[in-house]
Length: 289
Image (tube, rainbow, N blue to C red):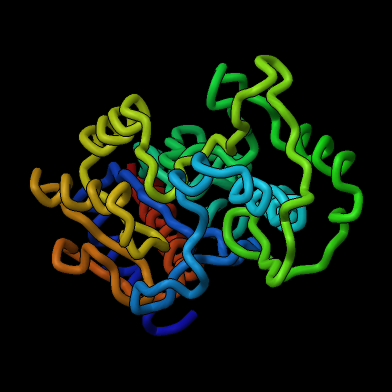
């Protein structure tokens, strides 16, 4: 383990001893070891072209054809991803009572796969598709099977995989890509049940996440630059209420001025050492008692 990770873990152990009930806010950096690319570099700038916006998706069929063609190629990585060490460690910390809940900006459901029970999927779920007209929910793999039947020439196409099940297909004509109608209402736009850039987090989901934070003693940000306001608001809310805010993330974040503690170290190593330190302390207390 690096000296940075050791120092980070010890600082986090000290923090959790004072504030033993954490709310954890996670971003793309938690899932990179599962093979899912992240969005931003250490300066908080885009590594890749910005993703689809809600407005573009809803305004024209060509944007939707482009989205689903790329998704048909790229989503297999997201669908097949397995939880990494960070996901499993956070689940273990929750099981031991140190985590009140997790607010995740990711849509990959890897926290749940790792065993975390109290998770708010802030930006929704990539494994579901919603009709924007009649509100029907469809499993995404069912829609992808239909898309593959309608567009057999696109199946198996090779491309570089992008975040959230996207793929880079350059200089491609998407106008012939066939999109299915909603199987219930017959004319609604089918859209992944996720919050695209430019869209708003549903109020009920935001309220649940804020309640989780208010019931906690400290906020731990893991693997997020917080450049998007939907995540930054939690750090701002915590700081305004006097709730300590800690962060494990390499590089610049939007909330740097708000942190009680910031660690620019390995997420996996730091969380693993945090769990070992806290578990060791619990065992020592139990033996003494």
